[in-house]
Length: 72
Image (cartoon, rainbow, N blue to C red):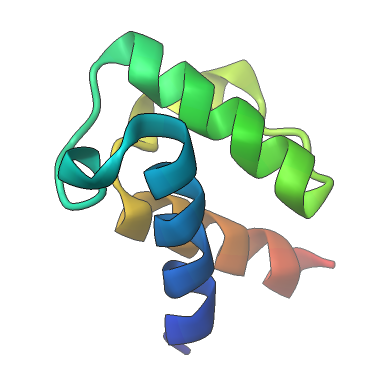
């Protein structure tokens, strides 16, 4: 199930961390780490290092967090 509110919250978080121009783009590796750390803090999750390379957009993160929620 697609959670648009989750995507909106992640987009706002990315906006705070990277700025407006980066919300709709893929991020470089440093930006990716900054966003992942912010998401971990915001949602109280730990994202394994092996999963981070696949999390390069708002949609990637939202899909990942939806999977984490479903697994709980």
